[in-house]
Length: 298
Image 1 (cartoon, rainbow, N blue to C red):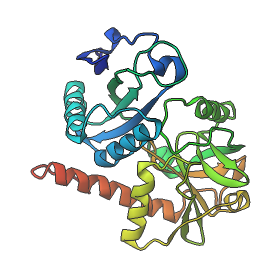
Image 2: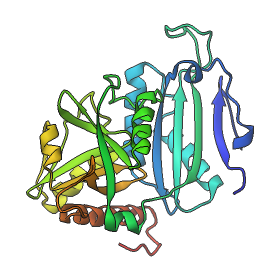
Image 3: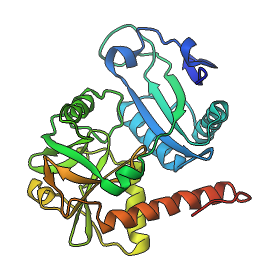
Image 4: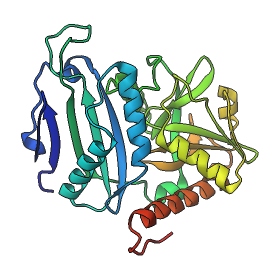
């Protein structure tokens, strides 16, 4: 693949340039401290999916850590559109990162620093038919990350270690618990189904409220699927009829084995099947709204 074009702004100097030529100073606080925020936006047929919700979460995370949002909504949309057009592929994954900027190394916020902004796009690889038909395996672990998981920080070492834990066990994800209650996966929200009811952990500082969290809640309400947000114990997860994961790259996928034991019947269940279909319908509806003259399969 040709060297992709990225957007980079350092100390207020912005340019579109090949990824191989992009450079950030070593004193950027993102490099030194992990002092920054990010978002990942899926793109279908050249149209970013739920971009407004991603930009709202980006603004919320930036405000939570005291980083000035470098652009308004229209400014972000314009730069994302330019990046999508430069990358060219119909289905993409846009990565957006804002750090506090370049400053002398000191822990407290610098008095003056201009946020560093970086955007890049890559091919979007969604789970294949084998995952949809057979499901995934996962393991559990105690959640020992920091207590502001609601902030989409680039300081992801805790998540990296949980992802490596899954890789070391030869499975797709680590599902975490804190104080005996379900939180989330290393890079996904986690859902539980029991007796046809879909359950999600509360939206608080222990989890990142994924954009798919809101979408799946909307789909459940629209289609009459019983849905509850409440604390979920480890025992409830172990005894679930279905376990689901959701994220920008996973969309929604079924977990059929957890810690080496079958989840429910050990195959993707009926609630997953319905949610997956509704998710694809939501994508198609989004594309029809953005591309009214195009023929979009539902």
